[in-house]
Image (cartoon, rainbow, N blue to C red; front, side, top):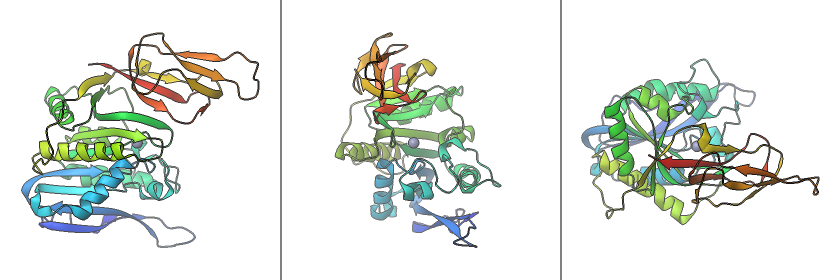
Length: 327
Ligand SMILES: [Zn+2]
């Protein structure tokens, strides 16, 4: 696998090309998967890696990074942006969370596998060729097709106190209402986890979801992008001051609530609600036995509902909501 662009050449201006993932198949014996990449370079300064479409059905980041690649004058930069608006291209083309080529959920495959399928090879290339060149990184997410989020900057918790302080300061600069520190017990196979393990100040954000876009969600993604680039000193801030976000944490499995039966989940609290421990979250109605008593779901702890499931039908194991709690 290789990149069209020489990432060691520091050339001011805009360059675009492909990451070429070999993908030999019946329809295209010597075919590749052409993942678009852009490098925007200005005056000497740090490198920021910007990624969207890690999950193909999460759209806000895909919008603002496409706009950035097309519209930003690289001469305004003090540093370099490496931008991939459609990182898992097959998933982006399909509008799905995972790749139709190999079922790969890119954000559960890091650090990747050079001998694996297309998605594992892509993860390995990002880990070995892009992360080592970055000082800062931001990976855009949303709730995708099945979840919906309040607008949150996110950073993984780390034992490195200096890095934790830099992550927190960056989240506070990202101009979103919430800044969540996510406990490291959460999945370690994500892109930001791979970045942090390699010393990158790697942020993420969760904005919107439900497989759609809204004016507010696109504006939030744009604010997060401009906020981080300003904080990194790469692009002079051009937005008015924003109120500081609320710093919260996602500290353990009790922050997540799962369906225990198949049926229709009828929520009793809304996204953005503050709930108490033991409070009812909703009930699950049987689809085919109307006279069966509903099954109640209760929150295991107090917190703020920062994410909710979108489709009403659930099966056992579906996450119907997750909470953040005070930092
Ligand atoms: Zn995602």
